[in-house]
Image (cartoon, rainbow, N blue to C red; front, side, top):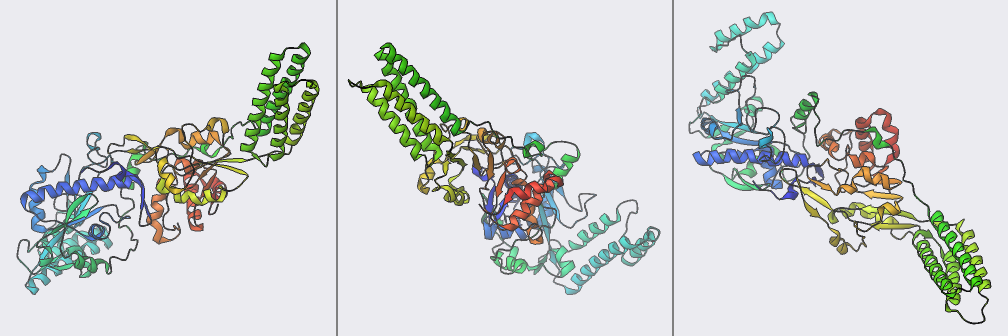
Length: 610
């Protein structure tokens, strides 16, 4: 399955943050579905998207944003036939079910693209560089006998097996053999006490569930929900044929009666309600823990460096100091002009006056650009330049030495006024996407007309990571900002090193720790901190409000590690988020990541207003 490069980018869907790693997990899962589909098409077997995956296909044309795995249904007969052709699956694939796997105790089966947690390096690119095992959950549809007595007997036997499992779980060890023997006498089911009894119980439930496999019956059941809750009994007509719908970038099969199936499971399924996960979310966190337990570093996870909290401000020559250097130079030139007059060297005098003019103009332009209300200073410099021009014109009958004395007087006034000089704050904003400008715009609007601020908007280039995570060609969206009525400057020519801005505002916090994209490395947070007094982070995205203490936000909070515990956020001196709940959540996540002793730092750093 080919995907556009931008598919792997971090994004927000329905107010929920989906990290680039999850996008690769999604893509890898679809690859497994396509392998299943290939065999089913070859042998005329049916399969259907179901539960959350079906909901995603119909409502979102892909994954439900907070879902992380895939669910399909197959009729028992079709699944049994599918297993006969497992050798046609790619190398490394494994079908896991209670009938095929000794340590697996579930009525649900799965098709996995690898036996181990980690994919081997030679196949990761096929699975969009998602490094871990990906599986598709398979729910079997079993026939319900049209003979009510037959079906009742089957369900009663299944419930007896469930009761046996519960009884054994609560029984004393010394009593368990007797309990098993009594069950065997009553129901005729034999157990090997040298092997897992729980596994054998679920194996027998699975066998009993498939008792009417292949019969033409009016109803089909998903036994797990049917035996526990009496639900998930379907008219067989619902699964006699399928239609194809879009799921992410693939076209996959669903029942043509998907509306009935979704309404049974979710009611008004078009109402978006953020669900919860039946397992630890995200699904790959269990694999990450295994890797970390082995002492290995996970390349896409940023590891906290306490030095990131230290910000040594750059050495900067103040505007006053720069101005005084130029004034000193003008005094020196004035003295050189006096010597030229005394020695009668007219050409030297003209050259000196030209230098005086240029330096005074440079100083005036610098003051106009970088100083607050420099009008009096600039006026004195203009008057200084008028005196220079008079001398340069060499009119007869002039007292040149007196004119130079007047020039010195003007310089003395400028030097005196410098003590009152206030320098403008240099703020540099570094958006990387025009579509993300709206999160920065309130900050820009606050300062764009402030006479005490020089505000620079400098879009920076970025690169998308492809299927193998390598960086693609440079993307620069500067031209798109023209449509936003924002004046921009060129990152290639802007004098970052010379100006050393007082404030730099970033909106891409990942540095190299996103598997979707990366900004130009010059604009990584560690380098930007060297260039400014204050590094400000404003997220490029907006999610729903997240209250880390609200159980309804548990999935949102789980993904915060992908955009909070990253270099730009950790290194920032100020972080702006839109709500008090988000502020609390950021502080909690950052404190847990960086250590309890850093809580005060984050309480000062994270703000919910500009």
